[in-house]
Image 1: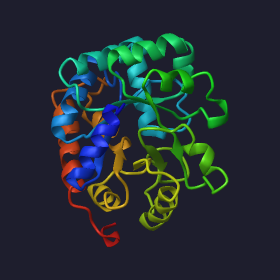
Image 2 (image 1 turned 120 degrees about the vertical axis):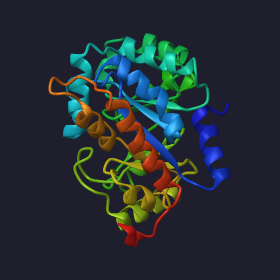
Image 3 (image 1 turned 180 degrees about the vertical axis):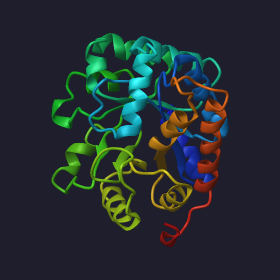
Image 4 (image 1 turned 90 degrees about the horizontal axis):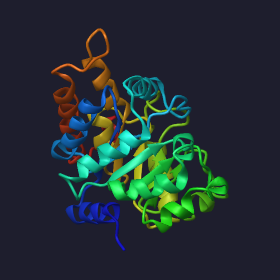
Length: 279
């Protein structure tokens, strides 16, 4: 049965363009503002939403996303509140895919079986759990897959030919290609290297590929749009949230419009893929 993610990538293929995958952290800077931003993302141009599950030790994330997790946790965000946000979103939007992205610990303590059931009931479509390698996914992946959730894995610049089959095994929805070696938002992708790695992955799977982890600018989005089925932007969006806050770290009138305006600009750039020289 086709999931929302499958349907969205099929629609993007019919339109002949890549999709914008927008990442925000649930509860950043507070639940109300975060939900308002979440609800506004599709109209601003987000084709798929990655919703970060706040965690106190997000080891794969750079300073911007780490700070967003800290703001969310400080405001009282919990896994239950994150799932409630998805449910509230689904009451108004039954088409835009939502992928929960984060770390295993908050899922483990929920615990797993109840998390999977509640995620499906809330309207979650997929999971990206960055600290579960294929060899250690038995506690979560089979249950998630059986419940109809896409289990999305990461491929990186260091994923060689011997490792790639394990990464692609039991993966569904799309493959998330990490365009840099390192943590999120700390370096810019090398477009030539991304082209080579994405081409290598495409030789082994028919799944769509979304590129992320270093994508911040309209020029980068435009250039990467011609190489993969999706382009992920996260650090730039949570940075826009951070820059809009008042001195005490609270949301202002500028917070939501500032973030959604950036999404609109990135979505427009994505619809006009550029040549490598644009970077």
